[in-house]
Image 1 (cartoon, rainbow, N blue to C red):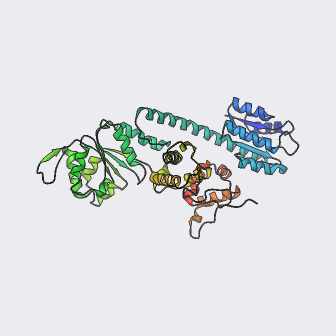
Image 2: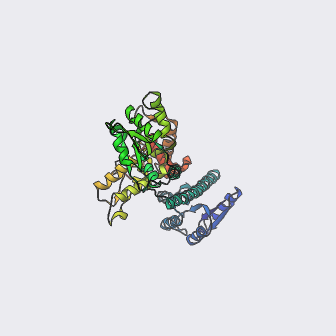
Image 3: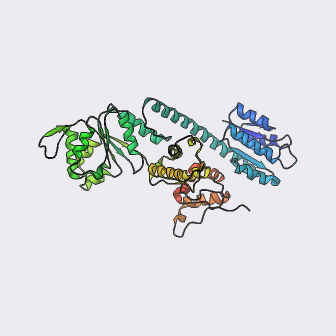
Amino acid sequence: MPRVLIVGGADSGSDALRVLLERSGLACVVAPTAEEALAVIAAEEIGVVVLETSAGGGVRSGREEMDLLQRMRGFDPELPVLVLAAATSRETAVQLVEAGASDYLVTPWEETRLRAAVRNLLRLRELQIENDRLKAERMQAREGVAARFDLCGLRYESAAMHRVVAMAVQVAAADVPVMITGPRGAGKDKVAEVIQANSPRRSRPFVKVEAAALPDDRLESELVGADGGTLLLDEVGALSPAVQGKLLRVLQIGEFERVGAGEARRVDVRVLAATSSDLREKISGGLFREDLFYRLSVIEIAVPALRERPEDVLPLAESFLRGSSPGADTGRRTLSDAARAALLAHPWPGNVRELMDRVQGAAAATDAAVLTEAELGLGSGPRAGEPAAPASGGPSDDPERRRLEQALLDSGGMVSRAALRLGLSRQALYRRMGRLGIVLERRPKV
């Protein structure tokens, strides 16, 4: 288990603190100075730093402690830091938490509370390490796929989307129909592009057709245009009964009859179908042919909604931001911290398409180097304060909402501290706040 690093001056009581924690089964190391603390962090795996503040006239001033925190975060931005403050240095402790420390306790602190705080932070550290390991494995897997296949500029980090991409490149070589399902705007057309780009038909025509706009006498022309290549039928559930019958014949015997020609014509086309509707329900309602459904869904790939893969939100947003800012200044445009938090908290009912529209629209409307949450149309963003009172008749009776609001109130509106109390990451807490409609009001500093 990673050790606890106690940082305090020679007169601080660090040795007594070490004895207390070691009696609880926690391995500790003491560093009297900032330089020694940094050397320990660089040399071994540390689970938690317990940073004692000076009560006045001590070895360090508040400024030195802030400098030490920033240097430690430079080594490891996610290293948990618990501040132990004398009553006279409470303001310093609050400033350290605002700058990135995990939590603070003010003397005289209870031993049980101190032990619990250290153990909770150690557990959080273990989860961070495990999460980093999984991220590294996913990155290695993504890089392996990207090196072998053409992903058509698709950006993702989530395991859910990696499974989609892995299946898409695997089935690309199989010359059979593929049904791509998922909500509108989730990226079904991009998955279809990946399939086509890695198929034996990659150099042949790739024709995309909106099924709802396809007249009964137009399918033949689209098939001719796609001959030898790939035909993508978007929202295939909207095909008319007449077109469904013609398409079934093409899938069964590879031919169709042109209107007025009176003779059959053979065609070699791979058909990809995309839908956001429940085709089985349409079959039950007599709106879609069951035999056509089974012909089209030899392989089915389900693209998850963006809210189900929040790890993809920021990489996609950054990609859209770069794409909307061609030229030498592209690399200098970025998102503010509040904008990132707002993006993670938003439920994204319009999925990737909504995200793209918001980012590109905001980028086009301003020349600012840093986009804010207001420019993205996502409100004022989370700020230190208090949760806004729920509207009458709203979801205030939800026990989860009450639990989150109470944690935010107890933490003075500081999301990082509230997340720690709840045993959640900050991103997870922001997502739950967005889902439950919890916002933080702006309050002027007094």
